[in-house]
Length: 223
Ligand SMILES: Cc1cc2nc3c(=O)[nH]c(=O)nc-3n(C[C@H](O)[C@H](O)[C@H](O)COP(=O)(O)O)c2cc1C
Picture 1 (cartoon, rainbow, N blue to C red):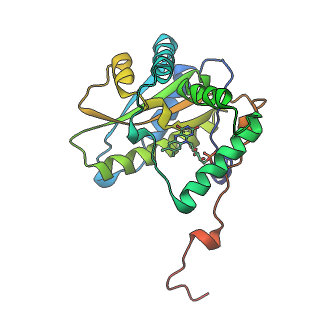
Picture 2: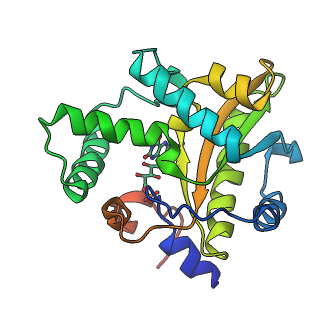
Picture 3: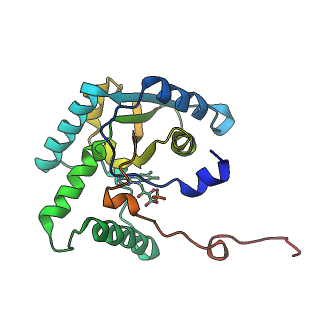
């Protein structure tokens, strides 16, 4: 796949076909993604691929914790957002709910959408990325952001879709229990991975983007 095309067409996929993703394909994606940059080449990412019964157990545990009213890890929620950032968050939610036919006041279906997220949108595979506590927070976050996007782009080459997903690690203890990731490792992000179901309405989402003029300041350019 053309690199610029991949950069432009990548988007979050929130509905997957049940088809399993061959382990060899996931290995190729991750082997390429390991070329991602990290501060002073620390490569602090520790990657766990979760499929099959382990993934089913994770989805189930997340659902049970969600339904029990357990508090989700605030790190995996990124908020609260205010001002323009809150507006962008709301704009995304409005678009997703419109596509899914969920009315704002329909608490049951909104809860159902959250539950689907906790089930990693029923993806057949998930990638959990953790970083040792000894690594500084900025370094950890930059490195995992860098490799997460690289995974998302590489996945496109194999017809796969991804959703980089805080919800996947909303309940860290469940993730640790099922995957064996030690308490000394910070869980940074999960990525749902699978073949996109393009009939799933939410996959028609087109999250708004800033214009070049809004996002970029040119300093020292004569033109
Ligand atoms: C760190 C991070 C965490 C995210 N967590 C979630 C999540 O928990 N659930 C979800 O549906 N999308 C999640 N997303 C996807 C964003 O909503 C999405 O990237 C954004 O709306 C832009 O849309 P696009 O990916 O379709 O271009 C996350 C993205 C990032 C980078």
